[in-house]
Structures are given as structure tokens and as C-alpha cells.
Image (cartoon, rainbow, N blue to C red; front, top):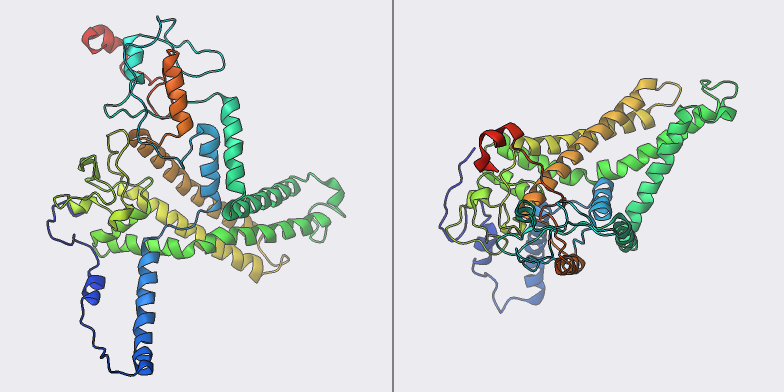
Length: 418
């Protein structure tokens, strides 16, 4: 793997310079040429330029949110109750000496979250970061539910929100019905018996399976262009040795993947804030897709590249499994189709996609736990109000007291560590 280095040239390494060179070419058109001739000659170049522009945009674009991604966003909003649309870099700094006398280390007020304590061991976990940032506070479950439902409604009334909600309900409904049929939950359909190929039960199992196969095609084939684009960039890096392929993947997966050496970048470096002495090997391509400056003032460590391999290949295998499922379901009738084939391909496609999505979720949460998440106005108001009442929130993504990693025996042997 190439080591991060410094590039002081006007155009950083790995940047496509073809557009600049084309734009600087002198025009060969004469002012005296006929109008029709000028436009007939310009059409091919205009079409070629449009194709090149669309190709560049597709190469750096983010795929549309899949059903699992949309569900994950809504789940994080519901449980974490974080508004991702209003970005604020910091909250008011908390004075270390404020608050009433200590009541107990983990005393929690009724109907509220946070702790009321002046204990130094507690306050060191609740004080703001040096730049004044504080993680969003945790809310009571009643308030989280209320705001989660409100956020879901805002999501539902959007075109994509309505589509994915309708899609998800269909997957749940048809999938649930198939599960009940496989469990023989409808004995009235077992005529003459449950396993008879012409029984109502077996017919509905077939119809359910056909509908689910079509539903799974939406994500497996709809996102296939972006999945194979990511595979192309990965093969560029792994086989051809082009580090720019990894940089482009880092920009596409900016929410959870960090390039080697990126943890050493200055805190203020971000989109549009790359200085000439910045090591460009630690910056994604294009620069506009690099992560924002960390809110906490601390950068997450580099992500192991094998995790990127796993995510990309899991999505590719999901598409291939769906191809096999379509071939089995639509290329063979229910009398000749092997009984094990459908369940096997569905299980492979679903499990590998879920594991890949879970890895992205875990890595993304790890990055947010270090670099911070934006606070909404409601978060800032709660932090200010609780501070005035002497209530403090743990300054981490879970708003919980960090687990003590030091063993009791070590503390007894070395009291200075406490």
C-alpha cells in the first residue's frame, strides 16, 4: 500500500486533469462560419462532453438509500432521537463548578436523564470537549417516541419515504404470510394434505415466494450499477495497485470508512479546507466527499481495508444470489424446481447483505462515537436547561457512564491511577 505523502503541486495527485486541459484548448470556430455548420459540428462534442460529465458524476455519486439504509436511519432517529438536519458544531460550555451539592453519584431525576453530582470522577466524564462540543443528551423514552414518530412522519410524506414505507410493509406482509404458511398455521388449506403439490397451502407458498422474489429484485438490481462501480474501484486498488481507487471508495463511504493516515490530518481540514501541504494520500477523491472536520476535535483511526472488501463483496454476492433466485423461480415451474433451492438462495442473499450492513453500522457508530454527531436546537436547549438545574450528561454518544477498564487489583496496587 502506498504511504501517505505530501503533494505541493497545483493539482493534487490522482486528480483528473483532462477537463482542465480540454477547457484550455483554443477554439477552432471562425466567426464567419455558417450557423448550421457550426452547430452540426458542435453536436458530437457536446454529446461527448455530456457523457463524460454524467460518467464523472456517477463515479462519485452515492447510491440511493436502500430499504435497509432507510430503516436504519429511522431506527437511529427513533432510539437515539437525534435530528440530523440541523447541524450545530458545539453546545455551551459547562462550568466545572456549577450545580448544587452532590446528592449521589448516579442519582437520576424522575422523568429526566442525566446525573446530579459534583464528584470529580463524574464531572470528568460530563464536561465539554476543549472546543466546547458536547454529545446530544439522552431523552426519556416517552419523549424519544414522540419525536421519533414526528421524524417518521416527515420521512413518510417525502416521495422516497412513502416508497420505502410501502415497500417495507409489502416485504413484512408477504414475508410474514409465507412464514405462517411454512409453519402450517392454516390447517384449512391442507386439502387433501399439507404437502400435496396442488393444495391451497402449496399454491399460496408459491405465490408468496414469487412476490417476494420480485420485491427483492428492487434493491438487488436497482443498486447493481453502484455496487459494480464500487467493485471496479476496489479491483483497481487490489489488482492494478491504483491507490486512487481506494480514495474514491473512501469518499463514497465517508460515513464509516477512514483512509490510512487520515487520523494524522489537522483537525480543521475538511471539504474546501485542504491546504497545499496536506498529505493528499489521506484525502478522498474528490475532496468534496471527504469527511467534515470532527466536532470533538479528535479524528477516528484508520479503518481496516478488509472491512471495505467485505462490504463490497457482500453486496455483489447479494446481487448474484438474487440472479440465481430469479433463474430458479422464473425459469422453472413449481413441479420441477428443487425444494431446497429457493430457501438456500434467499438465506444466502439476505444473510450476506445483513452482515455487510451490520458491519457498516458498527463502523459508522464507532466513527461517530469518536468524531461526534451534530446537535439540534432541541439538544442544545436541553443541555442548557439541565445545566441550569445542576444536571449533567455524560459526554459520549450513549450518554452513559464509561465502563471502568482498570481492574480493582490494579487500583489497589497503584492508587495513583485512580
